[in-house]
Image (cartoon, rainbow, N blue to C red; front, side, top):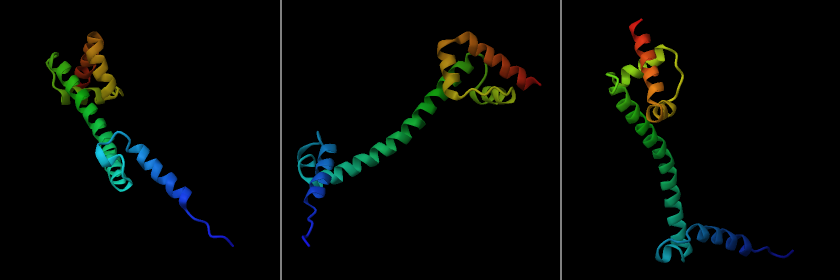
Length: 119
């Protein structure tokens, strides 16, 4: 029986890594060994970056909500607590969008929060 060699699979695997390393500087895009290391590292950075993006957006939303709440003589934590007590189930992303685009609706939310806190 003839021996099967792995040349096709090896070439495919190497081409895949080199394609991912396209545009990298110097031998990181030319040599398989260095390209493989660079691609693995960039994959780690991409994974971490996806987590950081979620954190960054949440911080942005909280900052926007806090700034809008301060305009209505209320701080962020008491505003969110009031909304929770009033059983308003809007997420921070939507509240921040309302704060930026529709100040009247945000004022109504503040009023709801204050009412729930005074009970």
